[in-house]
Length: 61
Image 1 (cartoon, one colour):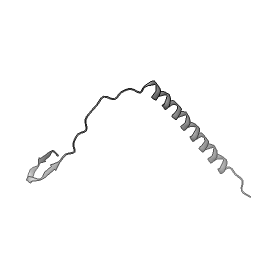
Image 2: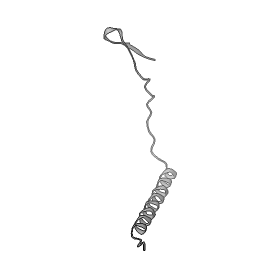
Image 3: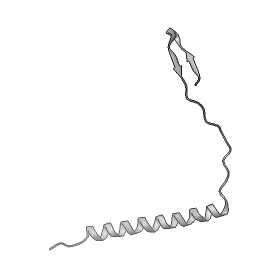
Image 4: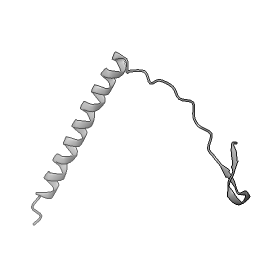
């Protein structure tokens, strides 16, 4: 661990820096998976909103 000495003799401990690397763009297969996941998320959210509106508009006698 890299330590530095500050004023008054206090030690300061710095975290180890992670290795930096260049990100790679997504492949065509990953892009297709992102599309399907997005469509699935939209369908799920739309269904949840539909159920919420249906339940809130129920007339309880």
